[in-house]
Length: 92
Image (cartoon, rainbow, N blue to C red; front, side, top):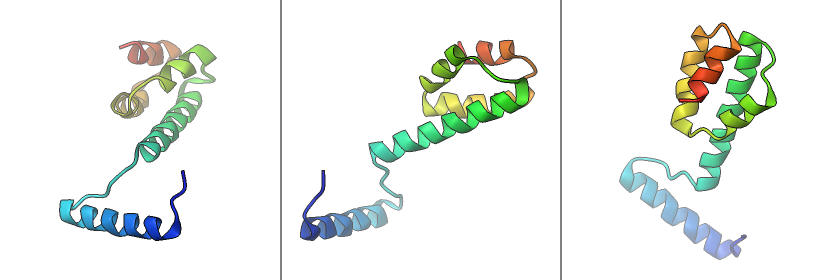
């Protein structure tokens, strides 16, 4: 959905004020989704590099994880030596 230019400007001004008041940026659900997909992609690439090409079912499981789970997996994969290690972590 695209707002008319005057409403878009007003929205951006109010959003900036809100972010200043709360001392934190507002992140839209679309931005959160984009961040999650990016993190998932990097974790999959790291797993492929660390333990070899991972199979599609494991990739699909990773794509169903929450942000917190993906971040936990990213740290844990540093100690993985087999696909079984990744499967066990994703199955938690």
